[in-house]
Amino acid sequence: MNWTLQFTDVPKNPDFPIIGRQEIAPGVKGPEQYFSLEQVIRVLSNISEMPESEPNLREEMIVSPILPEGTLLYSSHPSGNLEQVVFEIPQKSFDIRYKGEDEFFSLAFPRMIFMCELKGMGNQKLIDTMRIYAVENNKEPITPETPLYDFPYPNVMKGSGTVCWGINERLLVDSLLEAKKAVLLFFSAPFNEDHGVRTTLGINTFRKLLHELDEQPYSDDWLVPARKTLEQVLRETDY
Image (cartoon, rainbow, N blue to C red; front, side, top):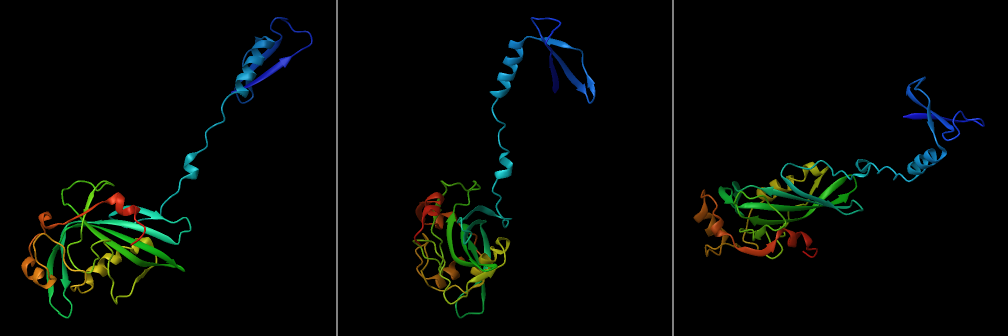
C-alpha cells in the first residue's frame, strides 16, 4: 500500500502535525489521517529494520541430467568429466552364452546393483568402469545401509565388484540416457571362468553351475555376503 505524508508549517493539530492519506486505488486516496512525529518515526524505523527478503532458492537449484529408468543414484565430478550412475536390476533370468559355444542358457540372476562410470570423451561419454553387486530380493527399498553380496558368476572381480571387460571394446554413448546399454553389453558378452563363481552351492566351475541351474529361479540362499553396505562401496575410490 502507498501513503502520502504531508507536513505544513502551520498544522491544524500541533500534537498530530503530519497528514497522511492512503492510496486505496490508482488515483484514489482515502480520507486524511493525522499522525504525530513520533508515530511516523517509529513506523519508518520499523521499516528500516525489516529483514531483507529471502533469496529465491529455486533459482540456485542444481538440476541433474535426465536419467535412465531404474536409476538409484547419480553423481558427478565438478569438472563434468566423470559421472556415475547406479541402477537397480530386478531378479530375473537372462539368456547368456558360455565361451566358445553357440548355445544359449537361460540363467537366473539375483537382484543386482550396477554402478557405471562415464568419462567425457569430446561430445560423447565412455563407459569405462562398471561394478556389480547382488542384493537380497526382499522387496525392501535399497538404502545406503543395504547389505551387498558378491556377484555370483564369472566376469566380475569378487573383491571390488569390477566388471572384467576382457577384449570387449568400451561403450561410447551420446548421453546418460544410453548408459544402460552397458548392462545389455555385459549380458551379451560370453561368460567364461575368469574370476570364478561365488555361491553357497559348492560348485567351483561356471560350466558345471550352468548345467545345475539351467532354467531354475534364483534363490537368495545362494548369495555370499560381501560384508559391505551400499554406502561403504560408494565411498570407495580404489578399484
